[in-house]
Image 1 (cartoon, helix red, strand yellow):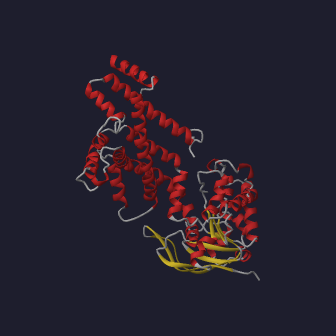
Image 2 (cartoon, rainbow over the protein chains, first blue to last red):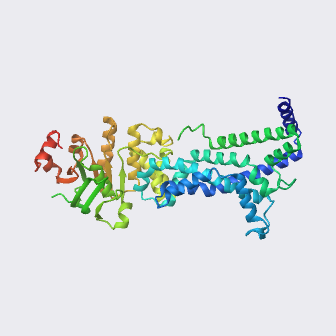
Image 3 (cartoon, rainbow over the protein chains, first blue to last red):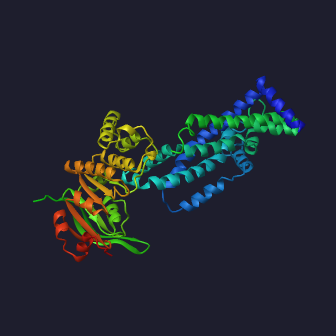
Length: 234
Length: 238
């Protein structure tokens, strides 16, 4: 119990004094996770929607694979990305290992199936509702995908937020591909892991509270910007 | 002499679902005298026929050749469903949507939206969310959204089912106007009174077959088949 109080006090102190390291780590966490979210959304939202409206031979297998990929173990993703980006790997020449870019790549791989799967679920229902109208209006696939994404944007927000939650709280993959290097690739989760290892539970808890507050803040901000509650269900 | 406008030629058209024949086999040259009403008992295949004519129903066999060029036919048609489908947008955005798909410029879209909202009596709810409209308003919006593209052929599947008298009258008024303006209207209904009020010609369907077609006054006054006679008398026909 004392450690939780000490953690709260540490968090309070870090925030009030605008601790330089904390600000840097927090901004890097946001940079990596929001970049990964943006890239994953660009890939997953149209793909999940396309999957909802198209009928093709291996559709069921594709959906099953996508759902299975939601549970990708981050450590395994980290390991694979590490092997691909390491000097002896196929993309070693790019020199991306132990950079924020490598961390973004790993997070994109982890959260894209999650966002695509949630998108598919939401869009499947909307497509059932809109199907006859969009067919009747002679729309092409591109117009259908864009219409569904626009009209289902509030449902898709849930998918994006789930993706962000997974990205910001992820530690295994980014530890492997980022290396938790001070002033370079250290983010909130890897810093928490480090402080816990060092036995500085108060600081680790402090960073943990900051992480939770950050996740809540981003969620509230996105909800407020998209005015989800004010517009109700439509 | 009433002029009959060719709509489509149905050749060996057959629609089956789970090996049950819903429609057909139909060989028919469909012509309209302006306002065609498709009548028939429940399960006769009225909605399926409309879907086939609009090209949204997969045929088990046969083909439909539209009077206009095939690739343009769907562009020149519009469909109003029995249960209106509302985009999760405002009334204004719902009305604008078909024109946006066609790539019309913003000024033209804005003017058309205001014009059709006025004609459909939706001006006061232009910026309301469409899914929250009343049943009558939704159907009027669906009708205005279908007509905003100025289709040559308008299909309506029981557009006034479940509507009150006032909404039905308003929709019928708009339909008479567009029919008079040259749009061929093809509509299914259960309501014989409505059919008598609106029809210029009638297609009577029974058991998935086009049983009888004729000009409205002829078929209502002197139906040829005993089944049509019984149906128009109000008897149960199977």
